[in-house]
Image (cartoon, rainbow, N blue to C red; front, side):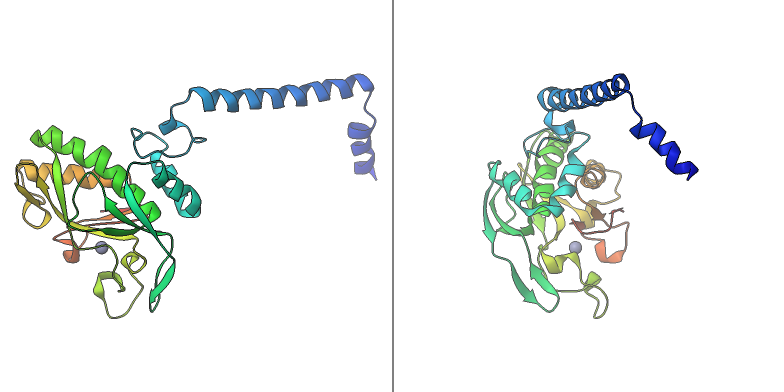
Length: 248
Ligand SMILES: [Zn+2]
């Protein structure tokens, strides 16, 4: 009873002046929020603006990793990112590809700035992460280190209907959903090769380059595994866009 009368006095027995004051505060708050929203949208650069969509050509910023991750929840936004890019690609219809293996929101990359020795089939958000890494990490790091671009990525594929580490039992690998790529090495414009098997952990320019690449990939992909993770990865970097946030 006491509580009821306290509530009544506080909210119902309000004088007109007090009501006006409350209304004014509410309206002012809404106006301020709308102004902040509008100004944020107008003046904050895309790469640090959480309200703007992701663009592959934008220099990565504070919000880039978050925006790539958000694409997992929204296939249409992911396809829009590709549509707003200069990539050549095809959408692949969703389908079951094997026992507990499937394509869902998978895209075939036909042309990028680098040759992969064939088409790349990846889930849309993983592909977006890959091309952002390629454009904003791999190439700038190659130019900084070697004064030339990478012209080819050597890899062991993206899709494979198999378990983690090719084990007979256990959980399915992200490769089973075309959500991962295994990168084995790189070819520079002058034809020289950089190999993860041979150059990883070496005190050489190639070794330093690979260490920088590994670190940069962790800013784009959810899971990054290299030779330091286990012996299964001694000859490649595994990049995926699954559920486990790992950088090793
Ligand atoms: Zn892999």
